[in-house]
Each structure stands twice: as C-alpha cells, then as structure tokens.
Length: 412
Image (cartoon, rainbow, N blue to C red; front, top):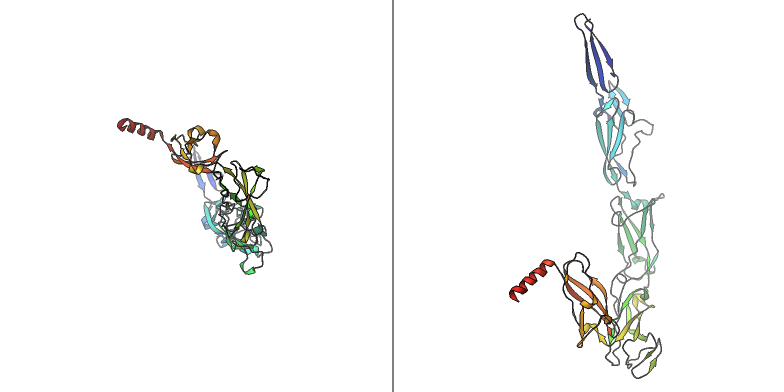
C-alpha cells in the first residue's frame, strides 16, 4: 500500500477533509484535501397543504406546516421511499408581504442535510365586512348615534368602525356614502330612511348599511352675521339683514329655512333716542326710532321648515360711518418668506374727507399673506365706524423693487 486516507467532518452537509499520508515505500509526506458534501436540494422537495388563499386578519399570516393528522407538509421521495421534513431540523421558513391584502410569499431554506431554497405563493384576500355583519362571531363593530338634528346641506354622521380592538381609518380601510340624509325623517317614512353605507376598502371589502333618523334642525346652532348699520340720524333705516349659515358653511334660505317676515330687532341695553325717549333693554325697536351711534341691536329670526320651532339671535351696532364707503390704501410689502403682518399706521383710511386714526378700526384677519403676490387683510370699524372691509395689498420681491427703482430713474 502506497498511502493511507483519513477523513474528518465527512458525515453532515458542509466542508469535509481527507488527509492522504504516504506509507514510505514509494511516497512520503501528507496531502490535505478539502471537499464539499452538498445537501439535497430543496427543489426536489414536495410541498403540500399550503392554502391558496387566506382571509386578512390584521396580523402576519404564519403557517404551521403540519396537517390535521400532525404529518409534515414537506416531503421528499428517494428510491421509492418518502421522507418527511421537519421545520427547524431540515429547513427554516421566512415570509414576504404576509400581512396585507395581495400576494404573499413563503420561503423554505434548507439546513443540515438540505440546501437551496424554494418559494411558494398564496393570496391574502380582503376581510368581508358584509359577511361579518351576518355572522354570529363578529369582528367588526360599528358605533354611531341613532338620531341627528337636520343640517342645511345634509346630515353626515361619522361612525366609529373597529376591527377587533383596532379603530379603522376612513378613506384607508373604508369609505362612507349616504342616502336620504337631506330631509327630516323621524322614522315615519320607512321607504326613505336616512342611511350611511360603510364600504370596505384596502384590506376590507363588502358594504354595511346603518339607518338613522333626522329630527328638525335647531336654528340656534347655526351661525348668524349682521353688518353694522350707518343710519345717518334717520328713522326706519336701522335694520341690518342677517345672513345665516350652517356650521359647514351652507347658506340658509330666507322664506324656506327661516321666516324673514318674523325677524325682529331689540335694544340690547337701555338706550336714549335722539328725541330723549328712553328704550329699555330688550324693548322692540320701532320703525320711527332715530337711534344714536354706538347702540347695540339684537336681531332675532324664527326658524321655518326643517328649522321650525327654533330661533336664532345675533348682534350688530348702529354707527355713524360705514367702512364700505371708505377709501383704503396699503403700501407694497417686501417678501420675507413668512407671514406679512401690517401695522395700523401703514393703513390709510379716508371717509368723508376725514382720515381715520388707529383707534377707529382693527385688523381681524389675513388671507394669502405669506407668499409673493396679492394678499388680503380684513378691517373692522370701531366706535363711530362700523362694517368690515377686505382689501388687497401686494407682497413683492426685492428684485421687483430693484426694477421699479431702475425704471423710475430712467423714465421718471
């Protein structure tokens, strides 16, 4: 014999070693040779029992790879003999996209006597909220009131929808649509019951309907505005027509939503008229009354139709001058990359030949006052001056200012 061979690590998958040693007759020395013991490729493995689709649960979909008889799902057949593979001993499992609706992947990676990897796919289908509603084991809960007061433009209740303990998000997990929600219906007209539809979206599908009732609206919960009134020391011109809007910005219609013929005007405080007559607080304003400037008037209107049986009150002032007739000038302002706020002394207001002081008005709001271009400021009269005005002013860049100076130098 010319040599001997000794092996190590030559049982399991991996790198094995052979040591060849000369016997001394013809050969001397040693030679170490490494070689690889390859595992059985998983491509030869049969995978059974994985569902083709499963329902969305809100959690990771993970399989137990044993059937009802506790037999493994994975097997391999060699020489007509089937061998069952065990997770953690023969292979490891990982997943991709196994939470949300869509195609998910399960990846088997061989270990020990097995090598390589294989993939299998399954579908996660949306959870059906409509079937859930008919089930005895509900996972979906919908909480919403049963009755709502009429609102101009329609009633749009927002239900709270839960999947188990998780609150679902509108426009992500479901959308809402409505039917018969624009009229008062206390339930007497069963054929046209107000209804909200919860429509599944994303990981949810199906539709669930919830009915509710709509009672008469409350006019006192709406928004009333009445402009200050300049009377000019005349009688019968004190009335300011109120404008009523809903909380969602819908304008109520006189004659339909409220009775303009029943609108009444009252003194808010005790008032001495121009002729010396004293009116008590809460007294009705009479057409012939000549009301002094500064008097606060309370206007009350009465609901009609869907707002019948309720009232709404607002206030305004009788003033000497109305800002609606004023001339207002505001200089151009430099762009600064932040909100432009005006000082009162920058605003020049003239009315009937007089220039108002800073005490005669207040700034109550702005629009578009951050970027270059046209901005708006809203001004409200104070004291003898009443009404509001929204005026535009310009926010300009430094470059524009430079060009204006150049043009002025060139052309005067």
